[in-house]
Length: 263
Image 1 (cartoon, rainbow, N blue to C red):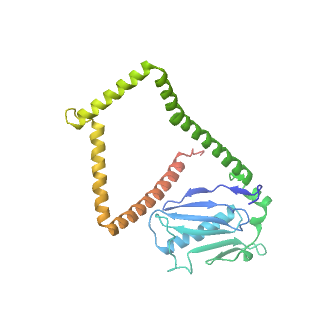
Image 2: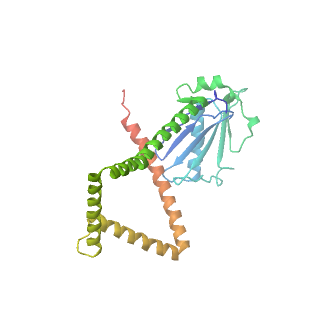
Image 3: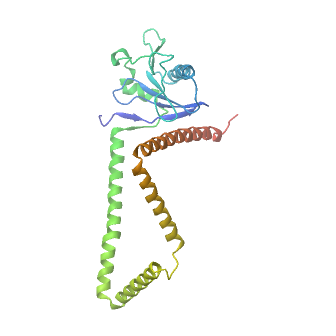
């Protein structure tokens, strides 16, 4: 990508039983991407109808070719083959006849209008959408890397140089050496008393031992039944995906509720 190429931000809107995420075209792409995330289960016909309604609305807002895809709450592409030829919907405005074209097929690039390849046109159409050039993104990445390097050096100084300095001071200062020796002696005595049962374990230590025992027990049974463990992992990932999608939908609904009503 060229330094002056534009990257637009995507944005989401709530639609009751699903929400949409619209992403303007990337550089050298002829179409935008519209994702429908279905939070509450609906039949294939309802989803397909919603996709067709959405592309019409988004084309009125932004007259750029668009591809629509529907996803289930766990992030999988929803199958619409029972009601449509494929799961993907392409839509655009015919530049000659000014008519809306809907195609349930993967349309080749040369069959799509090339309006999205016009950088000036995109800037005008998506004037209200946050955007950055590739050069700006590269500068931000460079700043982030520089910040990480500074953080690494701070950790290095604290983890390596500070202990080294303390060790040097120990060597030069008999008093500090005695203090360190006394502290080590107290720690060793405390640990010995705990190990021999003469000193009760702290609440934190008991909790840690219980957690370690639980983990060993869990690992033992997972090792004995790998197939069940893999099923459990898949179920957990599936549930986490659904929870993440529902949380996203709730956040969008909350944003709508918090928007002031000018009326």
